[in-house]
Length: 236
Image (cartoon, rainbow, N blue to C red):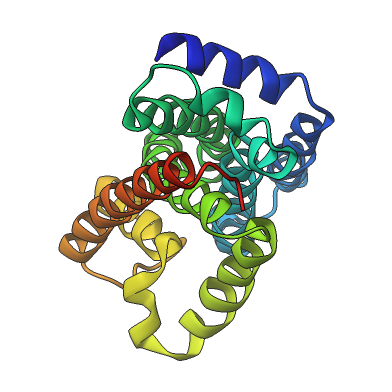
């Protein structure tokens, strides 16, 4: 399992795709520093930067890039066959790759959110955002990893979820917020350190329970799908 995780991490950081992880976190920190330098009231820039950019764009997009990259490329080029020939439980393969995706996504998103939250209010708010982002990274990574096994267009479907479901529908249709990872993250962050910079739209119970359901459900679905690859002897 550790060997699979090491190979996954080396492959992920060895591709040019990893360079896509840098601009958005840098933009988030840069905007926060710029607002701080010009003494802009945090009440004016806190929500659009922390939520509009940090939680609505940086966290999900980074998780999408990493979550679909740890296994999706192997499915596309057929090298997944070599992994499936190894005497490893399919569960261990998924857990190893999911672990790498979660760690990379969480660190990449949590660090800039901590910096931006600290500049906007305090280190406590920064820590709350970082913790919530790490929890969100678990749910997003499991979801996007599952998509990479269920479809050949995981990035496209992931963007539809981020932009249409979370970005559009959840703003106007309250019922869709129950299936919005972004809303779980906002609620968890707000419960850890309450702030007037943004408002939560779902209860803490919903946020925690649905986050667990996303992680467990998507992970189990990914394991089951990988088993079907092995049984069918194909990657389509």
